Image (cartoon, rainbow, N blue to C red; front, side, top):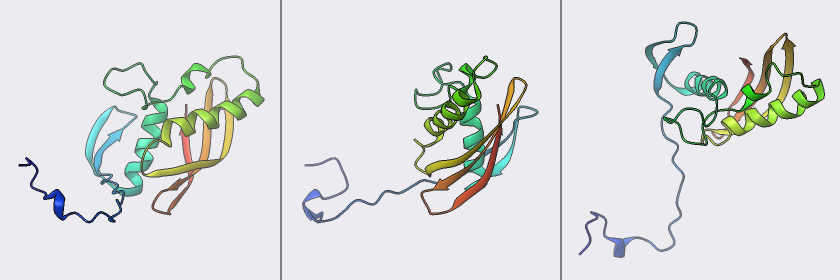
Length: 139
C-alpha cells in the first residue's frame, strides 16, 4: 500500500518530464527607501531578482543558500585594472543570476567605472525566449 494518491502502476513508463517554471510573483522592493510595496510579476519581478541577487553579498547572510548572491563587492573599490574588471564582473554577475530557472544567459556587458562605483549594463536571455536588453545595475 502506498501513501501517495498516485497509482504508480498506472504511470506510463515512456512518459517524459516537463520542467515547470513557477510564477515570478513577488513583493516589489523599493531599494532606495528599503520598503516593500505591492506585488510584481513577469519581467519586472525578474529584473528585481537580478538587481537584488547582484547587490546581495554571497555567503554572508544565513537566510540565503550558497547559490544566492554575488561576490562583486570583493573587487569594487579595489585598485584593479580595467582588464580585470572586464573579465571578472561579467563572470560574477553570470554566477549570481544564471542559476535561476527563468534565466538562460547574460551577455553584452558594458562596464563604466565612476570612482568606486560601477555601472554595468547587459542583456539577459530568459528561458521562455524573451530577451531583456539594457539591464542596468549600479554597484
